[in-house]
Amino acid sequence: MRTGMRDQGNVLSYFVRMCACLLIVMGCFGLVWLRSSIRDQEYEIGALQNEYQGMVRHMHNLDAEKATLFSVAQTGTVVSEKLGMDFPDRTRVFYVKRDRGNVPYEAAYRQ
Image (cartoon, rainbow, N blue to C red; front, side):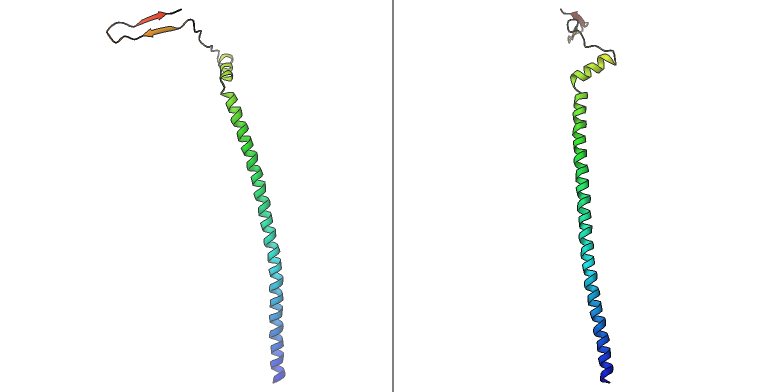
């Protein structure tokens, strides 16, 4: 009877040892997997930060281009060349004076 209990104890002890070894090996692989996935996430964050910086530079370039397009010189060039408009001649300006009474409005040409 003692040999039967000893055999069962050996089997149980063997099973516990195998489970412990398996748990240690799986823990090591899990730790390596976890570290590699964290490293992949760090690389992805770095790539996204680089892309963000590129987009910020592009946005600043677009703002500068927009400022040049809306400058007075550029607007004057577009108006005169494409639309055929000219800036008014300041020597030929008509001034209209308003009187509060029932007097008709007067327009004058000042030189």
